[in-house]
Amino acid sequence: MTAFDIAAILVCLAAGCGVLNHFLFRLPSTVGLVLIGLGASLILIGIDAVMPSFSLDDVVRSHLLEIDFADTLLKGMLGFLLFAGALHVDFESLKEQKWAVALMASLGVLISTALVALGFHLLTGVPILIAFVFGALISPTDPVAVLSLLKSIKVPASLETKIAGESLFNDGVAYVVFLVASAAAFRTGSDAPLGVLDMAELFLVEAVGGAILGGAAGWLVYRAMRRIDDYALEVLLTLGLVMGTYALASALHMSGPIAVVVAGLLIGHRGVKFGMSTNTREHVDAFWRLIDEILNAVLFLLIGLEVLAVAFDTSFLLYGLAAIPMVLAARAVAVGVPITVLRLRRVFTPGVVPIMTWGGLRGAISVALVLSLPDHPEKPMLLTVTYVVVISSIVIQGLTTGKVVRHYVKETGDA
Image (tube, one colour):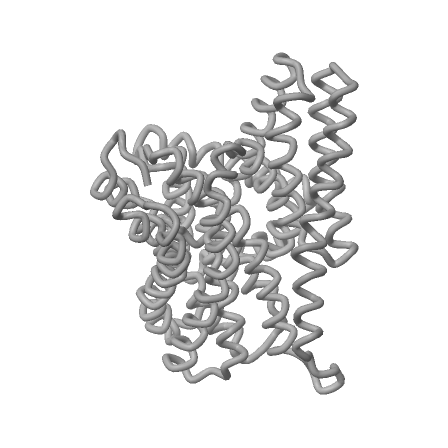
């Protein structure tokens, strides 16, 4: 099948499953699409087990394998989804929460990575460097899943900013940590040892370089927008900004996710305020909301269907189930430490740590990162464990975060 055929099938399936969820299940779209995709996959597997001659799952699997999930997300959809999310973040509120967001997206990721790595090493006996790779890929909260969740529950403004801001930045930081960990863990005998300075240089080029590139590109587009009043052209400018910035960042070995988030924040703040007419602002907002909704639907359906395209080893399922509380515990510490430090200077409403712990959903980014790993004896186990943690996070946490928020925060309260 051609790329267009695959895209057409996925969009049609996402639309159909969205209708089914809307009228029958009435679940949040993120959870509903994952469950429908997963349920369809399990039904096909069950039919094949009962009637092997049909081989329906083999037919679907062969087509799914034509889709490189890691490349589709990391080099395709992610830039659009992150830009759309950053574009709609309240910049003034983000400035007020900047220290909480910055500490959780940096120090929090490092703490979570280290704790998960240690626990995973003790649980499975894998080499510590491999465990660090797992810690890095499972630590970031998925901005796509988190932002989709926030649309369906009522969260106080400042708490929403913390959750959204952290999720937008911590995946970029975690991706850099993942690159460092995987370079150390999977280097071959011909590769030079990766020293501390090499790791620091990689981190600076990826993270800081990505932020500078995103800021520069966003500024250039903002300056162009100030001199134009043509909504079609300005929508095209934002589209070019995302695609060009992400592609250039990849070519320069900088963080594409961080670059488009910074660009999105700049356009969403200065561009919207000073560079767009009311007519343009409405069209840009509507365009990126639509892109966000369409790609979200396709992505979460793919997560559910991906179980067919992956050869899971059932012997690793117990490791996956054991990893769920371990990852949540690491997340609680990763949120709790920065909040505890900041409590010395400001007050947080009780409940901010459990809310951010439970609301920190894992999603497609973790699946894409584990699929991007080179072939290795430990990869099947890492894949199975990652998938179990991600599905449980989207379904269980996604369905219950609203109840956790209502338990800790009054309707008019703040955190």
